[in-house]
Amino acid sequence: MEESAEKKQFLKMTETPVSALIISLAIPTVITMLTSSFYNMADTFFVSQIGTSASAAVGVVFSLMAIIQAVGFTIGMGSASIISRLLGVRDVEAASKTATIAFIAAFSFGIIITIFGLLFLDKLMSFLGATPSVLPYAKNYARYILLGSPVICTSFVLNNILRAEGKSAKAMIALTFGGIINVLLDPIFIFTLKMETAGAAIATVISQTISFFLLLQFFFRQKTLCKISIKFLEIDMQKLVQILLTGFPSLCRQSLASISTILLNRAASVYGDDALAGMSIVMRIIQVVASVMVGIGQGFTPVSGYNYGAKKYKRVKTAYFFTVRAGFICLLFSSIILFAFAPQIIKFFRNDLNVIKIGAAALRFQTIGLPLHSVVIATNMLMQSTGKTKSATLLSSMRQGIYFIPLIIIMPMLFNLTGVIMSQAISDFLSFLTSIPFLILFFKKLNEKEGKTNL
Image (tube, rainbow, N blue to C red):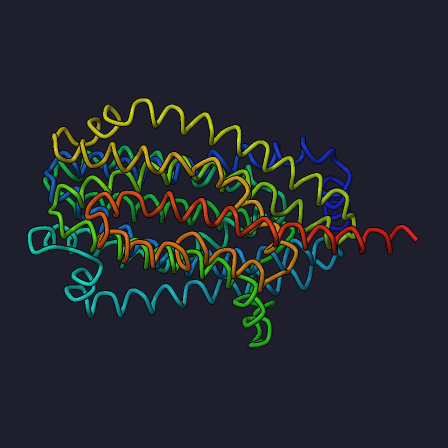
């Protein structure tokens, strides 16, 4: 039965028309990403009703969440890339060993984050950009997020393994249900129980825990090709290093996202809590829109990995260009809406004239480079899914690292608050230009491989 299921999945991933396959995988993934982003936005919305300082605290803790996500994505994307290629050559046992090691590693790293985060909570929040008036709200929020770190990290791994198998719908069910719970619990904990920012964090951790167990039950109920079991657990440092190296682009991307958020918060806080709150709201809005492209890209990733492992290189190319086109159309439409209604969108979160003025300007600048994410994200995922770790790492470091970090330091010196607002849009454009030569070189080599395969 297992052999039949594995063969059926292999044929699905390597024979189904690429556009239909990516759509079938991307739709549940996009829904999952949007749900995750929406319940993060729900936190922002409900917390913003408390006050401007509380709203700013969400932006501060956002960078802490990015650190936790960096660990989860590194192990999750690293193991998923390896697993999809192993399934492409039909080695299910090796894929199960990889899944088990990734699961244990993610939970262990999550515990380490919890311990060190709680020990140095005050210093950590100040370092992340909390002003004295924001600090109490940020600490109350971060304390519970840190307690949930092991579960959050491990959920990313389970989620990515399901996607690597081409079972995005199962991941969608678990994460969407958790997201709905989060939105329902937010107003209860924040307002009814009067727990303010701590209530938002508790609601988030409860929802993440529910999602974690829903994801885990698919593996325990034998609904997956990969098994997470003690019999596959072995001390294999080489395999762990391989997972971490393959996921290193995700580590760079997420770690730099955290660093850039810290620098953005610190740069904005110079201009007061209004600026910090405005930028915090914009970050969450952009995260929601960008999650659409990330979701499409994660629908593309297993298709790319499976077919690259099976040496079906033409399907890899077709899948990439379909992903870029679909992503560009979605992001362009979103950018037009956000640009046109920027003040009204910011006002929905926080009805404060200064917050609206700063947030609307930042949102409009961000939308300028948003459609270019289709090329940047798809190219990065193409490199990572095919094992081109060095190229993927460099590309993932561009948008919120190599380009953004110098810009967020230099631009405010030249243009004050406007420099803070402009930095991300400039970084997006430079990242787009950088991805083009990598893409050209990759397809040149892929064409050579395809030619040898057809001989």
